[in-house]
Length: 284
Image 1 (cartoon, helix red, strand yellow):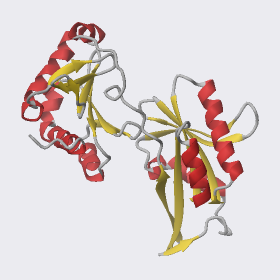
Image 2 (cartoon, rainbow, N blue to C red; image 1 turned 60 degrees about the vertical axis):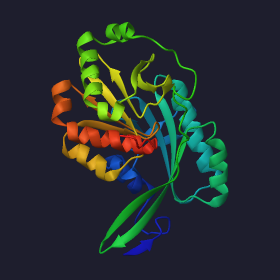
Image 3 (spheres, rainbow, N blue to C red; image 1 turned 90 degrees about the vertical axis):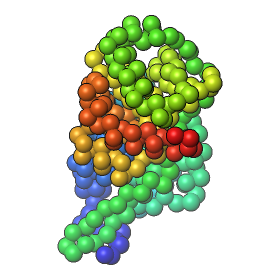
């Protein structure tokens, strides 16, 4: 397997790489993405290489591609397009993505400075000749800074009545049953009713290694941990509705009710154990 330069390849052009990424968004390793548009025209001029969104339509990724090493114009253009899309569509969370063959040390420092204020991911693409084909590999060189969560900052405490009105008593009953079933993990913890989710607390201190977001007819269950390919594959093989949210470093599993939870209880327990390990909790 021979490593090759995309920039110096006589037949491979940026458009071909762009087309591959658009048709195979999973290759970027950014979770389950949906392609939205290529060569998206910008109001102030220029074209955004690729726009993608998450499966739940909460986040949009503004992706710029460059063969060869990063340069100032590439970085500036990426940030400009991110800023334009963010202002045009403020209802979404936005993240800029730079894809280049080489993320130089100098520009890694620049990107790291920007990343304090701008959500930005840098991916390095490597190309290898395999027989008559070319294989691409994407490596995340710089990840977006994870924002603080409610347990780390001030949050608005609510009560059970708030969530019964926001979802339903039936779905809240499902949350109760799951919480009880997991008592060997949650012993000593209690449900903590916050404005945007139902978390856990022990001795009055939030410890959200798992949390819930009840809806009207289903609920989301969250497990905070690093992405694990083996665990991800097991969740997919079980045909669970699951997404890894890289921004928050957590798995989100959609459950239609208690029966679906029981069907996958063993696998969900593995998710809980992974989350507890992430939080360095070992007393279960």
